[in-house]
Image 1: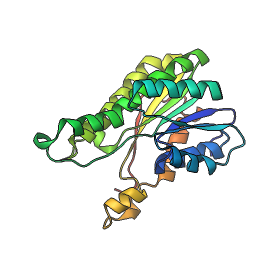
Image 2: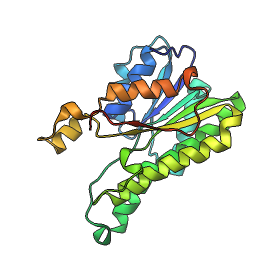
Image 3: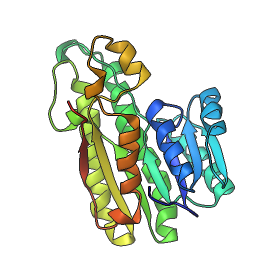
Image 4: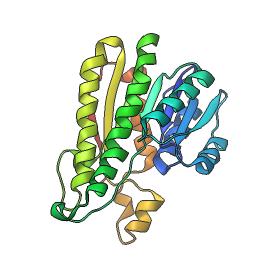
Amino acid sequence: MFAFEDKIAMITGGAGALGAEVARRFAASGASIALVDIHEESLQRVLSGLTTRTSSVSLVCDLTDEASVGNMMTQAIERLQRIDILANIAGGFTMGPRVHETDLKDWDFMLNQNAKSVFLTCRSVIPQMLAAGGGKIVNVAARVANEGKATMGPYSVSKSAVARLTESLAAEYRRDGINVNCIMPGTIDTPANRKAMPDADYSSWVAPEALADVIAFLASDAARAIHGASIPVYGLT
């Protein structure tokens, strides 16, 4: 297990299955946690279950809204002084109709949930990472970022945008001591996915714990020479 004593990690989407697992992993490794989500009650439940010897806070935020993200970041810095690690876990998925039948609001929803949220959060965190002399950012793309699938056009495009943004951020900030990388999960074994696909072979899916392992690696000093990578984490699918 990687050690993160004296580090402060911001986890977006912290009330979700993957975000909560990532928060537990960092907290168990000694980090202070800034847990971010739009669902306050769920945030408090996850925060109360963290095992950490250091300070952790919950921050309610609409990550698709510029003002909300700015206010959240102000609160985070006031309460924790800095952010060393940003794990952009927040996002969403909807299966849609074919492209010609896709409503603009559904297109915007996917782009906002998955790409705009990452852009706004990175834009808010990076200035203080620059002032501190470095940091680690790990984004979450998806397997379909590399290959579009039928009835998944908006989702595929939004996750491809995350991968390309990761590469651009890495190219811009690698010489400033900021590592930016992303993971590309296959189907994640979460309660929501099991409910949506009750007849699937869950054993072939990737466990949140396995994804948390990869995120922790990318946020550690062991990944100090890795910039702009998109790491496939597909499980057995």
